Structures are given as structure tokens and as C-alpha cells.
Length: 211
Image (tube, rainbow, N blue to C red):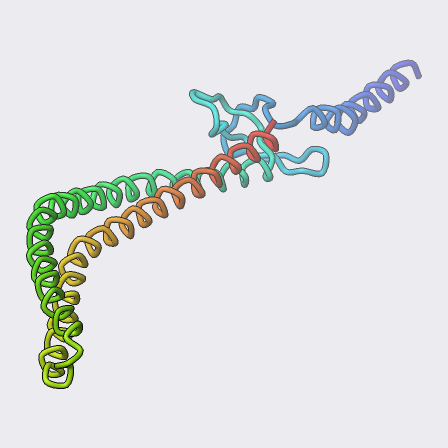
């Protein structure tokens, strides 16, 4: 009878260990709890955990990580890979833009004195024509006789003023191109900043969830 009681008690203890101890052990599983078999899974607190090396830590050992943790890490790694690619592409783009800007600035440096000299020639001619034009207009007694000459002088002045604007446009065209290129460079850098900011946010989210 005594042996039967012992046997019954032993069986009850084994059953208690089998069904009571396991949940207690599972309840201790959380992000960062050490584990031994890579790829193994378990459930605790309504979550599924996988035994992996924590990707956000160098030389990490195997630990349990929840699905939410591994998903946010994967999202961060994907975004961070985009940052690495974007950084290289942006550096290449900026280098090309800087080279183009330098070339334009050199052209402006060479062109400016030449254009200035041509503009001065045209402006001197305009001034000389205006002297004659003003004299003819002042000769009111011969306005009808000088009408054609007056018209020709006005046309000549108009064309030379167009020439002056065209000469100056050579410089402003280069300046406008430089401004456009600087805007493109700023846009490239801003885009990189946005991508990097997204990666930083993803990293912060992953660390918060993973604990």
C-alpha cells in the first residue's frame, strides 16, 4: 500500500513537472534571452520567438528574438542598404555637378572681359548715334527732311541695344546653369538626408521593439 502511494505521488510529481514547469520556463523567454539552437522557435506571452544572433550587435551570441523584432531589424537593414547605395550615388552625382560648375565658372572668367569689351564698343556706338539722333531731332525745321535718317538712327540704336543684351546673355546663361546645377546638388543631398533619416528612424524603432 505504501509503495502504491509513493508510485502515485511520483507520477503526480512528474506530471506536474511536465505540464507546470514548461510554461514557467517559456514565460521567461523574451528578447535577449540566451538560446542554443540557431533557427529554433518557441512561443511565450502570445508571441513567437526565434533563436538568432542579434543583428544590431557585433559579435552577438544566440538569443531569442520576437517576430516583431526580427521584422523591424529586416526593415532597418533594407533601408540602411538603400542609404549606402544612395550615399555612393549622391557622391558621384555631386562630383559630376561640381565639375560642371567649375567648367562654367572658368568659362565665365574667360568670357567676361571679352564680353565687357564688346559691350563697351556697342555702347560707344550707341552713344555716338544718339548724339546725331538728338541733333536731328533738335533741328525742328528739317524734321520732315531728316525723318528717314532719324528712323534709321533709331533702328540702329535698337539693334545695337539688342546686341548688348545678347552679349550679356552669354554670361547670364552660364550663371543660370550654375544656379540650376546647385539646385540639383542640393536636391540630391536633401534626398540622401531623407533616406538616412528613414534609416535612423527604422533603427530606433528596431532597438525599441527588440529591447
